Length: 386
Ligand SMILES: *Cc1c(COP(=O)(O)O)cnc(C)c1O
Image (tube, rainbow, N blue to C red; front, side, top):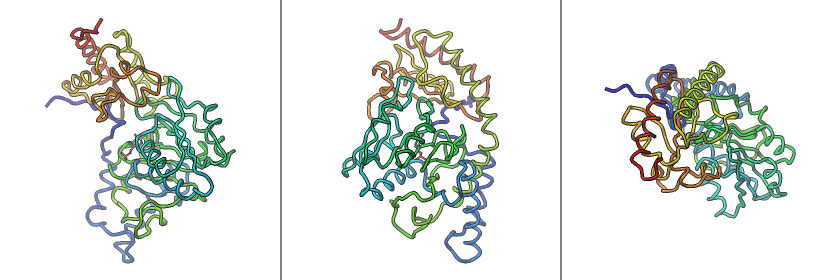
């Protein structure tokens, strides 16, 4: 079989061998229900609590402030709906940005239908939330600000410290979807001034279907899942012990390797950008090159379709993604790219590359060659091509 190259780590990551190894006993001999009072249950309970400490440590939080969930989507839903419904007497206004993940945007739309008011802040052409716009959007009845840490398409890292101080000053809860940033860049909840933070295991070399929500002590929120009262009543349902153990091992690994890995990935990222932009004209990088996830690149190529590039690269064994229209079910270009002020035709030729632990410099060089070849080929057969 052809050697395959995976450069779509923002979509998901493989489970690290150490993570898999840590999880395995919890499917077999350590299968207990963490709510059971016998030794089988105790074993599971202890694993759960040890895992809570590890996840908390990665965030600079206390273990009691971590609630395990089924992933990033659930954590985002719990944060937004939980805060909104619990604090409704105080106010019904929520502020977010227009480049959030659908787990945030669709939850906000649902809350709007239920009578809440939501402000969707615009972003600059590099994808940054405008702090002045944020400040002027704040009202007396604002109960929550939710701004993602790093964007999943363009990798832009938001100035959360500044937003956090603003939120604290006005006594407004501050949530971030940190699914893309946890384990890649520092995510200390105190340094960033956060009350709530969502994360997901499968974006940091853990298993799919498990995540966590950090909830600062004293934060008032409702549960959205009714049942046996697990996770301090905030998330009913028998805990996914094996998954949580995997998440915790992944968190430890990330904490130990983050700094060097970020440096290595940033070099690969910059190399790929340099190699491609040197050879292809009418091409650019979407997002900021300064405040950007280490492994993320988002190319824009005029006069080509992102899905043609994606399929060509797939034929070479390379896995990447695009914000072009046809790849999405909605048949509309990426809402993130449109929010940067790009015209629809400028979104169509986008290519997201997200590198991770497996990627090497040789792979970067090969991928660069293939991208250049693909763009040239499709431009030469397209009526629009120059
Ligand atoms: C992947 C992702 C999610 C959803 O996480 P799941 O665990 O897949 O539900 C939410 N937000 C962002 C920014 C993501 O990249």
